[in-house]
Length: 420
Image 1 (spheres, rainbow, N blue to C red):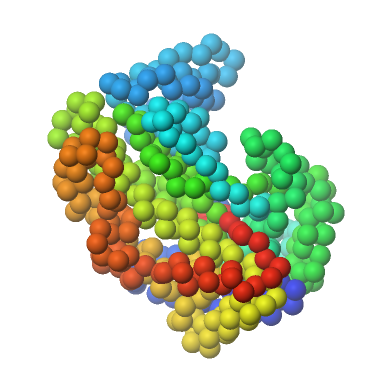
Image 2: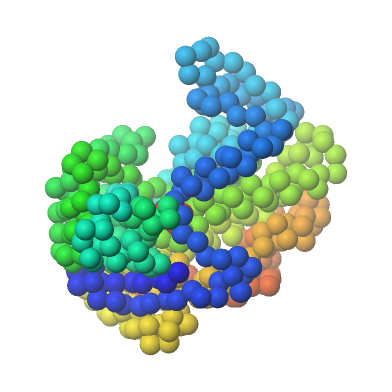
């Protein structure tokens, strides 16, 4: 896979980052795939496990107790609601999480949304619609991920599904959701509006956007939250977007959720007994092990987006100088687009979240008992205790100050947010 950044208006290449040795460095190859393929693969694997049972079209509507055994009510489609009792409730119910609301209320805590002022179009073009144009056929036949960037906007695109689909995901200023109810996340878009938003982008981009069928434009509001006061209460814990929703610039949203699952499973496997208070402490260990790490990646995605979306000014000139330096060094130097930057890849891909949990479990478990509420400093899946921001066994953590400073001397920009 090769990663390109290009100027949106001209298609001029800003940087190129080859990734020839990802498997050699980190043990696994770098693959591009659509989120539906990932979710489908996980689902098919789960169906092979006799201990896993799915209740589809049965959403949670209320958490009624947190301890000693969590109880909650679900509403099957076309049937009466009923109550479920469990030993542990792991809530992966996304950014609209009802469980998060219940956990925070039970803990007398408040969660706050962090306004991104951003929205996204997600587009999938079919191979048969692209292969008649030589330029578009070259894109879908390639092993390239391309991000076209402009002021307050970008488009990232790459082939998926054995190069039968070309996936595009955009980011642009939020115009359609600003006055909408807070629960609104998607809206039917207008093709002419979409074309206008990216009207100053290059002809190659215009060709792709014009292939989108009328009536099939859908826009998503991009959301994130400020760091939650807690991810757990009693024997209930939040995972994934329910507790650390992120903007997509770092391609770590699905990855963090999968890591959460691995870490909470490891924490519960190390439990010394199955008393409710012990389960609660193990869930708090999970939170303490993950919280700082996930917050760091959420912040890095946010500030990477700000850097990508710079308008004209000194900060953009400095960003483009860094792009040029990385290009001249064959992609080995730091890249302003942090998803493709080698030092950030080292930090993320070499971080073994399960090994970290095993290493720190006894210490964190003891501290949850000492404090009574688990309010202790987070562990090595976040910023390590007393180490000044370096994950053991990985490259140093990238200082966010180097990204934050870009916002202080530039005009015409706004605050920003891959499985696809």
